[in-house]
Image (cartoon, rainbow, N blue to C red):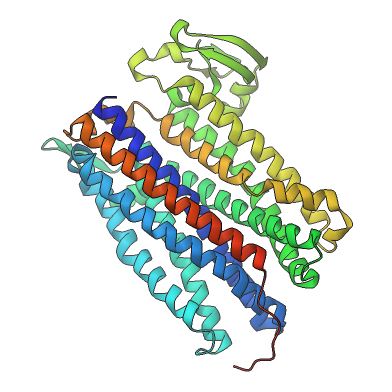
Length: 438
């Protein structure tokens, strides 16, 4: 394994593992804030218990997400030195804003919220969790602005052998970055919604704290159906932007080899990149042109329009995209099903069982979507500006392989700890009802 592949694999492992924590943190922070707001407004003790129960799971996930995020950022200096030198003026500025503005705000108020239950008034304590939720999502905004710039670089000028920031306004108004933000964060909300629905369904099937989990289920059902529908519609808008700005990625997503008008949408295919064809394929005529350019006669570039060295990995991108899309369809259907039974979920045991089994699926979908974004951008690390091979540090294969093995062991241990803690406290349920005064 050469240095480039080892470094890419190491970063992929680190980023994919970190991204297992991020979506649940983003969504649970807001859901916990909503539940605590309902407690402040209604005085219903179940909502206070719900905020504490789901908030505890949020804290577990948040703590481990911080650890994996820090190790991820170090790799820009260790494995991707020339990338850092080339675009550090832009990429580094965005990450610096994220750290100083969002991360410190989030870290400060998460402690205030966690230890302030008996020390703050209900309203002030509720403000603390809303600040945590706001900071978490601001953090996601700046990180996705940075990634959006890598996908579609704007507001820069090449000077003295590096990319220098020319217009900060252009960077933060980057249409591609905004569409990525509006797709990724709501997708995280869908994941957190199904997490709450699934855990609630597990307890309802066992008749544990029925009224408590009925209320959590009701809130999550409304939340999830809103964002599942939003993500499905916004995903189409994001796809049309990819068609305009990253045509090679679109061709790989659809395993489309020939440039053609009235391009079909491929439902199923077995791509054969070596012979530039699909061994087997099931196509729906003209649908890709319609979806990508809103015209059945629009021309869509095929992979053969790009030099072989500039094409993304086709099979991986193609199947990752289909995993994301087909699971997204299930999420819309399941969320509508849950919304229909939000007032009495016990009336549909099949729904409850389906929701329990759905818990891991948003993780798979969101990882698949991230793979489409990142693998589909290859061979570019900054699309059209800098190739991944130009960005890697001069390290020996042995060095990268050794650190890769260490990362795999480290992340495996963290993953086991996170899964055990989440499962343990999710099964344990909420604290008992007790009379209390603030």
